[in-house]
Length: 238
Image (cartoon, rainbow, N blue to C red; front, side, top):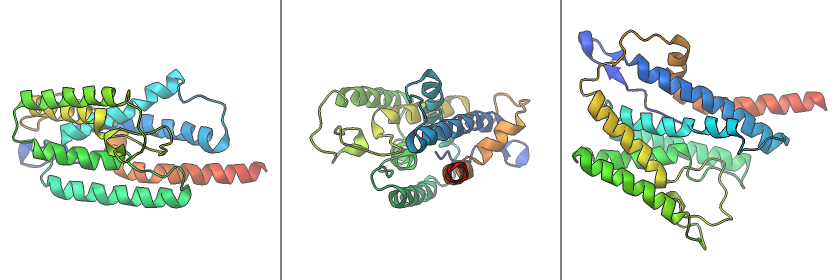
């Protein structure tokens, strides 16, 4: 999961990061790491634990928090198209690498693919009023709920969330309804961070802030590291 790291306050003449956003992002990173570790144990090492367990459902909300923060941070991005280009390239790397690891479960439209598409939509809507964007966010949510009820015969529209029962992807976040969270984050940033100044200037959360500042690095490194460690541990046990 990638969230743009360009959340800065320009107060004092020198750019400073918004600690509160880094800390919240860091909390989402921590939840994501724990979720993926348990998921790997379930998917690849037959851990008897349900993905529908309350713990997993709570941890899974980290993705939506990332989406919200991505939208919020879009207000601070100096070059949004350049950022989206990097995100799209990273998404391609994820797809190719996961295909070689498991062709049956490779990432088709995962976190980075979704954020690339959602970021482009935010860019196209930047000149629209708040009311219009809120209406689009509500429509995206309702469309997402509606299309889930319609049986799909193929997966041609999988980026939109219209999929058949045979669709597989180890990471999948379609535009509908997830675009809702990005747009609501964007509106929140417009309202509360117009001057790019922190709401809680005295907040200190060094560990969570560290995770938040390095979200993209942790995103790329943690899964290969987990699989390497788990694979090594399995060999030692045998």
